[in-house]
Length: 202
Image (cartoon, rainbow, N blue to C red; front, top):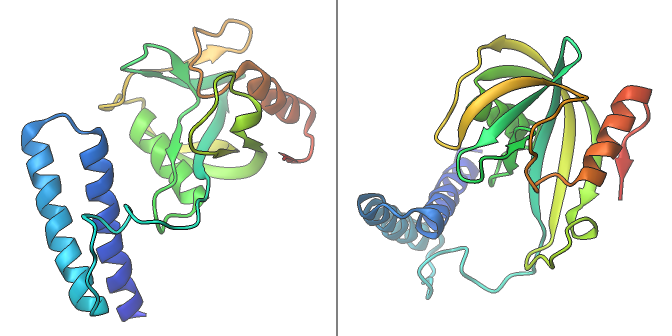
């Protein structure tokens, strides 16, 4: 178990480095992500006793699999929790990509906490979508999104580096929504919630 955890730790560092180098624009951060990448690659090579030709474990030819995201429908006093994305200035259900070695449910809990400040308990899987069926523009990497119903158990509204507003909205008076959840997907989710239907999946 300890050996496996050590390998997971190294690969997680490689994952963090790849994500950071892909999305970061800060020169100091990029320099540090490169160092994390180099050190973790060296550790991985020593651990596996193999030479990794490319810069990062994740820049290799592997069987392609979809990206998976987790999002939450949180309703309190008949109002829905939404967060405003700093970049697009549109609102969305809190959530994000599932990281390596994280469960989908853990990701949902962590993302809601990070983006809104609230602690939640996951109650039910509402829907599992193949996002390629809903977005108008082609997606270069196939995406699967899993939507949970969740209840607040603690915390308080708090913005993050990704969000600049956290609020509850009346279902009949929603703000401008992000394209991360399409109108059709949102309607399916709300239909399941309002009518206590079984999980929708495709």
